[in-house]
Length: 357
Image 1 (cartoon, rainbow, N blue to C red):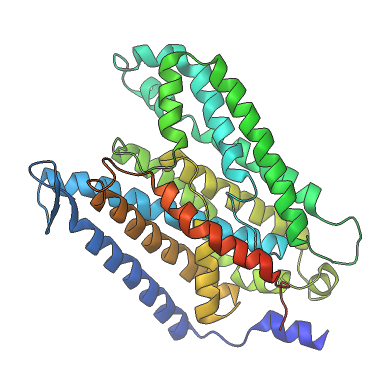
Image 2: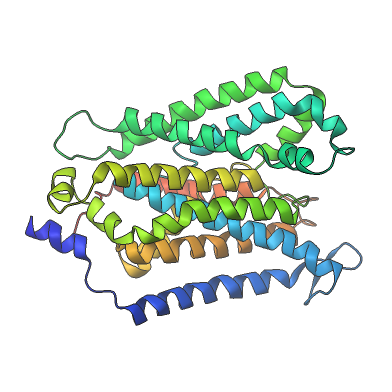
């Protein structure tokens, strides 16, 4: 118990140190954003370098800032899920939560498909609800998938054990396969226009058609999921112990798990609203930050999302800058999969034990 209590405490984190932590990682994200704004569409609509102005600045900002928000959301969701499952392999994409949110979006597109033809003539609340209403089914699909994976992967014994990495992986693969089958079925039922929209969405790319309104809605969802996670940093440290140890230290483990469920699901839903299912950001960035500053969740919930924002902004900028090489832009999800796939296999091979000293 003494060892567990020591691990849960993680040492003192003073207010000045906490402020410096925020300042450092905000600086990292801002420098990444500024650098990425230097690269993008120019006056001739080709890729150019240099600080833009006027309309060009807005075009670049509506690509860079959503990429940062998506990276922040996915990395934050990864931290929440790894804390919830006490498992370093947890990630919204690996566990099928992204595909669950995609099922919700596809259902929304299918049910509202007949109205999209009239959307251009609509205005006011009706048009806003039509364009942004998919946030609710996206969250519902993400939450439902998160619950299924958690229930199926968690061991039946009551000794405080955590989900085995291989079991978690298998459950996530199965759930993703089921969600994929549902998506295929729904896509077969959809009219041609909805199919085209959904194909573009499923590539996992930052769209050039994002509006400030859509960005604000997604930002609000991220804030709803992220702020409680920041406030629960100390509780996440205690929750990384066994259920018995955490309960003996006064933690309401059920409430903490519900918080992690909701935070991860809401942030994942916000990410897929803007960019579709982008994988492995929530796996790579928590491990980068854990390697830099240890396993203290008070620090991780600050550093990891901002690291994710910087990571995805830079990755998407590479996609934009290399468009001429690939005869068109790659989906940023392709790059994150190429980076995250080998990273995941190395972690699976190592099979680290969560919370080991």
